[in-house]
Image (cartoon, rainbow, N blue to C red; front, side, top):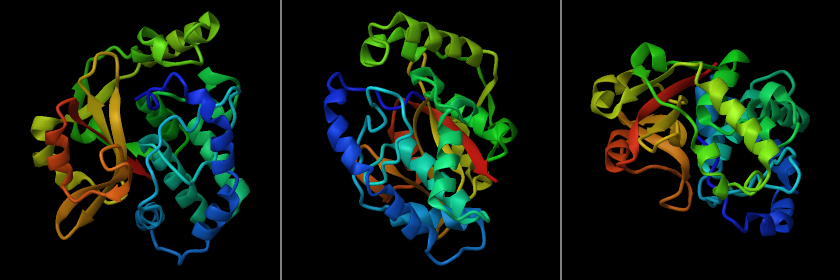
Length: 271
């Protein structure tokens, strides 16, 4: 998935965004001091629920120059998953520090963990999943419980007008096209919508759920974490519909079937 389509005037928000991330160390350290859980899945739910009610905001990563943004006051679905996972992994590590959280976040968000311009950030969820799996942070369960999908990923390069970073910059545009071309060499798997009910029992609390897209050129529309409650499967996410972080009141299956542009789901298991 591309990170939320950037509005034309997003760059005007830079001062506000810089202020919003100024207290990130305090927020992270407060989460690291929460009662210790036994498993990564339990920790993910604990950290995710601690952000419940915070606002959904798009384009919080877009600055004039590429930099590691640690904004824990507002989220889109992508930054919610990244930050919750980064804090949870830090909390269960031997190095329970803000600096380790930042390193983990950077390794999740940037190719090879290196910040080198806009194209070094991992913009598609499918690409993010491959890198996180290669770094030993998640296991993509989709090939085991889903089926192969044939799809060309090129939404960003074919909709450059939505992205100020390369709307008029051909160098960055060509870097994005090369990244998309490299992605075409990997196989994409999903549990299709029609087979979700038969396979949802294989999903576990704490799994990262990405909703694959029917939109041409786009891999994923939305993502969040799976949460089982009272024998039913729900989604913990930064919700565009509710404009805040929630654990959904409708089941994951109901949500998947309600959104027409969702084709199915990918399932990543943090490890």
